[in-house]
Length: 278
Image (cartoon, rainbow, N blue to C red):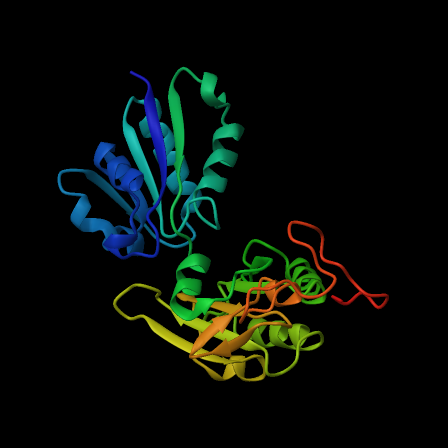
């Protein structure tokens, strides 16, 4: 019998944010493998299943175990919070399987399905308003697998490009200086009053939400369960919500919905000689 690996992203952790396919995939599985914290979040769905709880830094062990079990004909779920393809288990799984000779869709022994989920950046954004309405990027500040100079270069490029920046894995007990270094890199291109959202455990029991400013970003409690959103040069806070404009005010009067003089519907934004909207 052909085995199967289901790479499941189960979202922020609240049952209501588990997709229909993720729920069905968990039900379909015979074996569930995951970081012990992840298993705890979905344990009510795991009755009667073989469960393997793994610790931090044991990601590759999870993958090899899942592949061995799948090659034996089992249906195995490898679970991640958020989305399995965003700092989750999809990447290392496909890397290891390729190294071990897995042949993709043509492999006679093991089928693999990636089941998408609501990732942390979406969950955090929904709690604080509409900060991701325009271009944004995500950067992990963990240098356990990525050299810090590479992370630093990416932060600098995002700051120069005026992206809204989502910071994953911002700080831990051992990594206690990278967040301040990141703040300083961003301050070189952003005003100190740039809005920042700091959200811990989005949609979980200990959810905590803070809206602050870039200059004060490091004055708040931040850990591995925290995701941080740093606004771009146009992001602002109104009615307690963080908003990044899409650019409608460049073309329209928001009160009347009328086009501004010189602009045309469904056409590129018209700029003046200095590169500003007319």
